[in-house]
Length: 341
Ligand code: WQD
Image (cartoon, rainbow, N blue to C red):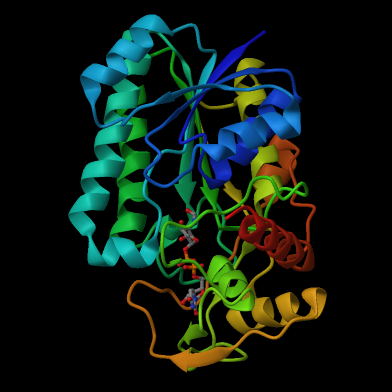
């Protein structure tokens, strides 16, 4: 049975990917420092799949500890690297935290891949690498513009690091996945988005407002040059995203990659405004969200959504779930979380 290491595997996208990998028969190891994840997710993964993943609590920025882990466990067929800080808003407030954490951890994991001769790597990148594109939708060939946030910049630099690293590690193959806006939760409502403290992202703020944990949802600006004045994003269900990681990993296993490093946009190809997300949530869950218009947030681009033709044609992947599926599953998860807490 092929063994796969998932860094950040107790996190939001990581945990959903672990479920997909286990359900396909892979043996999954998780590294996570629990800075943005909780241990109970490990037990809930087991409740979904019947298999408890191997787990080691570890900070990837601690190179001696990371090398020791690999010295004891190094027969991985692939490493899927999620572990990173990922809030656009927070990165504007704490840029050095983001550069230090996201780039040191990436460099450390790559050095270990070379040292322990692990050759397949999946990198969690982001649509924020496009900055504010001149044309929409964006394809993988859309020129990258200066990122609008330190978070987006860590992903731009991360991609460059991977390309430079590959030049000196001939056996190395990588897939870079540029996520758009991951939202929603697993149908079981046993795993989902678990923001630390006050959520930075829209969907958890909506669900926490709806359940009464937050007094109101602030919409950061309704005077953007869009149809309803609010920003547009390409929201994608986290389960669809997990499936793309499975397909990408198997693509590398089968040696089907056309290039040593391949890049794919992962979105639905459809842009939705903040108001459209709110209206979908209220409609499918029959609940009203208390909303207040607030000033624009630093780091926000007006609109970005994906052209996913490449992932459709090459990976054989296409997002299946709708915005209503996303808002319905997010609410189901929030309600189950409140019962738990
Ligand atoms: C979406 C829209 C906000 C909160 C995310 C991830 C990032 C990356 C890209 C993967 C914006 C508005 C938000 C709120 C609001 N994904 N908003 N009130 O900034 O697009 O980035 O997707 O790498 O990791 O963070 O997502 O959900 O923060 O914001 O009005 O309380 O919702 O202004 O227009 P963002 P977001």
